Image 1 (tube, each protein chain N blue to C red):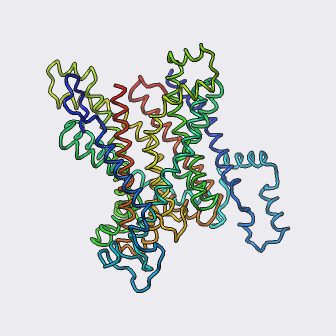
Image 2: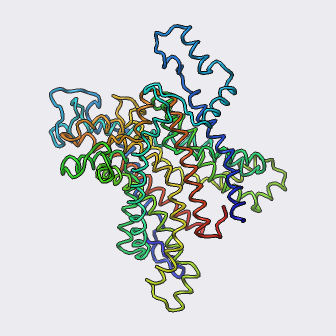
Image 3: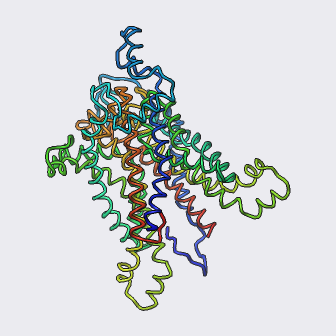
Length: 312
Length: 283
């Protein structure tokens, strides 16, 4: 019962954030130095035609009125229309969504086990040679530009060795796995160090906890203590971290998609920026923000389910 | 490098973090020297086109790191690009830092309704993935370094505001603040003369890590064609220019990336070192 009321409270808190997100994405287009209508009609359009379109899209109304129209459309699932594709933005996003979702899931599936394994190895040999090597990797891994690593990997593993395709998304699940392998690995190579650094610190802190000392004094073996007492207590920090990283992951996927020509949201975003397709930029930014909010909420709910001491 | 607490004796004279600070600082100083002395070290104009020396491999006499698709010297371009990339990393941190520190300071000290409003603003901004919002803002304002700094200021202040607010909320209940209040100092004096100096270390440590994030975001924008515009040399833009030739001429893309990596390594080592010194001080 209390969980549900806590959840309700949490959802109520989301309302101002959602309103804020809609205001920001609405204002984005207002920032544009150019006139979206001119862009839609081209430079040679007559003043009357421009005025007509303005009226049709409600662009001659006061800003507040326009905002309410925008939110009203959003609630009905209408994100506006792409100037470049002449398609509803919502449909366009749905077309490009699967590749990005696949890529992000792929990255998570690679990164989390790898980061956990490395962090465990580092924490268990704290200060030792293995730990030093893993920490060096974690530092170096944070320093390179993702798109650079992606490009170098595509050249070496894709072109030189010919093991993997270097562009596109493929057809069918296995083909997707094959096509997105290099993009996923290059994104992971950058995400793993971030996860690793924090997870190693969490594990080491947990190893010094009182309950671990108590287990040791009972004469339990180190391996047993680690598996039964330290690891389960590190699940929560990892989960929370992953929630925080999702926003970085989305950002990283944008450039990697460009390098490997993956037809995902990142490619759509950059294409729209280059083509000045304002409503697609607006719609995508909104969808990205909503996705982040949903992920954060899910992580928070999962945390409470795993550990009832955590408050929503 | 180890951080096992040794309460009994301290035989090692080198404090924690000293090695990292020396290494990181050294790398950054070396890059500053290379960037400022670029004309001296490169010896060539980074924009000089030469159709007699296209796609020359590294080690070619006169072109240590080779040439690109229009015969420009890669070494000269990497060195001149360092000026812009260092500037992007360092100057890109300042506006968000100033805004964030001010917001966090006031919000944390005032509390109440003002704080609640500010924190909702923070919640809204963090809901947008950092890089996506930067791309969106730059995309709508138009490409270029100036708009990149505007986008960063609009997006990046959040982390500083959160950090600062947390610090201030601890400090505002300390005795020295109460003492200052009793002595009749006004809020601005207490905030800027008493609280702010005590938070600066934490903010600066974060700013060093942030420089890496900002620099890499700037290079990514350059790569996407939304940052510094060609022919101005910038590492991200250079990598984009070299991309069509990456199969025949890997060096056009390889060296700018390596340069970015080494500079970021400097910042990360420095930040690690600082936070160790800070951690040791607090323990």
